[in-house]
Image (cartoon, rainbow, N blue to C red; front, side, top):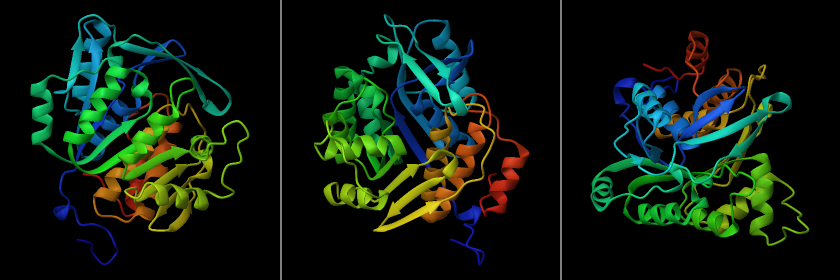
Length: 323
């Protein structure tokens, strides 16, 4: 229920339940270890916003795994489905920052999150719950074990929305993985570079790519082919974001910030969009809030910085107030 200002009243907001699947790791940035992995970052930001979030992933039976579990719990994430791998180490990624804080990732293989294999009991436990949104990406699909797990989750998870953050990493995606993911998606998110890549992949013109002339045409084509997709978000860095919903294309600007690094900024955007939209606000307001959160995280080191008083005030000024 909304008041006359269009703000959703707190006493009518239900707690959103979100489940994410995929990589959980440590980003090594300038010699410092930061908790990372898009699914974990997303769950952390959702928890900070007030959602009940859980992650399906795996860590090693090592010190980094212990630290990751402890920090995830401290951030309010449900760690019930974070598995411990007896053989593989906790994942790490070396991050080098280019101009404007743009990260270049060296992603180690053969790590715990490469083998997210749930037991029958864990599948059964998950199937009994109902979620507002199930979130997944592309990177974790680099192993056959994970693709099998994800395929079964698609058939067993009871979720009102399936959120696909494309999140492409060079050398770790294939056309068929993206197509399969799109078939199970209701809310799609990508950045500008990924939009161009997908435009080429889906048009079968990778070698001589001529992507769609406009994002609106691209979004229309996606929703024509994958009819379950109701919303598409395209992040545009300092230029804000574009959102496509029910045939309407809109661009939302954001306030430029001095970038520390952009690691986790897209995950903060995703969390802001999902939490706001699923709380009952429209997609335009959700995109605006998402841009604020994404820009804020880009202005701070690490993927899940503390939310400042100034950020809270900015969100409140936009008609979105956290508890």
